[in-house]
Length: 248
Ligand code: SF4
Ligand code: SF4
Image (cartoon, rainbow, N blue to C red; front, side, top):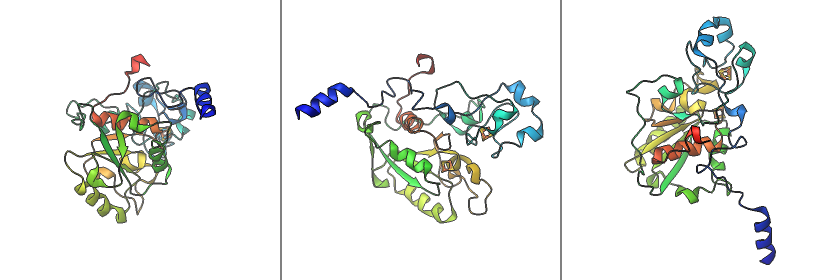
């Protein structure tokens, strides 16, 4: 026991300080951020350059974070790694880079800081998004300190986290899982596949996005997004914002 206490005192606190402090570069690495360019630079790109992007994420005015799989091919045509350590969390329009006033964030499900239960369903992921969500259950992120808990039943869940691009076989289970949740219920689509099909968009077995099957409240971009970005999405649904960008 004494040895254990001495060891703990020597190591200090290893648990993530997020969201009280900004995400560190290790928690939100540069490789996980969508490349960026000024709108005028994007407008000048030829169709040939734009077609380098395997998911069609490079638009005329902005890069669609929801589609971007962070492959970095576009660095060869002048886009730059993002310098921002802000997670890529938002409504679909926010991730597209548009500012549509009608596209509002959802009403928080736990606005008074009450606890929140999270259920995850994998509707066709490569397992990487799934693994990043499960990493939130590790002692490093220690979700319980924030009043967040994973639950094994959608009947106890406030937030449904969906990963993967829905296969035909998983469309009905996803619908039934959503219906089993008590109200108010919210859905967080995690990863490019869940948002818009990602690298599998348009495939014969992966025709739909999650929002074609259940209403999605918020999206976490990435392929896969790091756990801290998923945590930011869950906290946003709970009504607890992350640390402001300017404070980071
Ligand atoms: S998917 Fe790849 S090429 Fe397209 S914007 Fe993202 S990093 Fe660039
Ligand atoms: S978004 Fe990327 S990491 Fe996540 S399931 Fe799809 S291919 Fe895998």
